[in-house]
Image 1 (cartoon, rainbow, N blue to C red):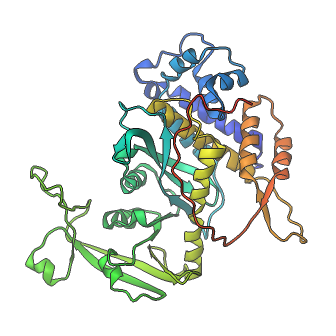
Image 2: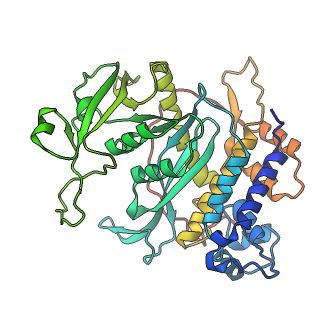
Image 3: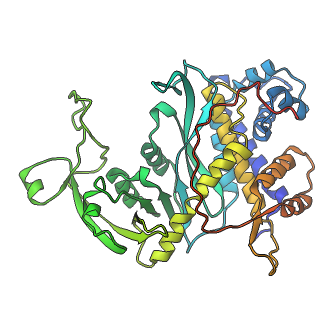
Length: 438
């Protein structure tokens, strides 16, 4: 295996940036010639600046980067860059650097959604308004696929918050991404859907592990199961019709809007269905008791070679995406955006994910010595690692060996099985004038 150094990873990222910029015809659209003149802010410099930005004001960011232009000039040049160039950089960077950690030969990807607060803009498709907030606010909803073992983002689908559709986003990612290696996708109860399970079962190289409901609103065959620890296989048939034959065969009826020309009542409940009718479906259901005495139920396509304890471990690893969201917003600066437009915010979302991957790939190479006298096992403090890696990226002749030593100095204990209650608080956008100056 080749020696992976910070400088090698930085070189991979720079190669990805060069490839994406060379693809100008698609990325810059009609404005592909916008960067053809000699300018202070070249396309490459703009991309590098957006990748390395922190949480300060725009004036401070430009000063720190040593770029002597006005904020207006920066915004004008930024407006010529499509956010899709950052999508390409993420894709190229992932292709150039193969993440190695797997679980029994499987890559483990978690899927979840999170909202990104933005500056208020009533004209945008991301604007939301309801009785609780009559003034309204703006949000984008991110739906990433996250490699929980390597701590890297595979890809992301971004939606305006009013059109949030996490199941639809995962369907898009299933069709968009080429899964060349065995992969497990883990998700919470928000991904419980007959149609989605059908797509996951049909997809080559994909297995799933999704938490499902277990009360009265659960899937019919799961609702029939006794409330105790179990590991069983269920089979059933979905139909979109209600013929006498369907009823006699005890098929599960799924209401869909089959007739595009028909006017349906707003009260009519209907679901997606992309398969023939009738359609047979079969998968494994496992249920186990938590330390609290409550049960948790998971639907999975994993073979019986995966034991109940391994399935519990895999599902628990899904929480890594929650930690990743926190790092994305606070350590990588998505709570301190530098643009109002949806396009600008999308640029910064993908830029943050790229730098998260850059930092994780370097931090994954750092060896932390754990002494026998230690009460806890220690790991890299990712907040400091991200800061140090971004500083290394901004420096033309950064010392990779020194970076590894510096990261190793900042550690934190691994505390397993913590059960702190989640303290969820609504947070608003941090205004452009309320930024730390020092």
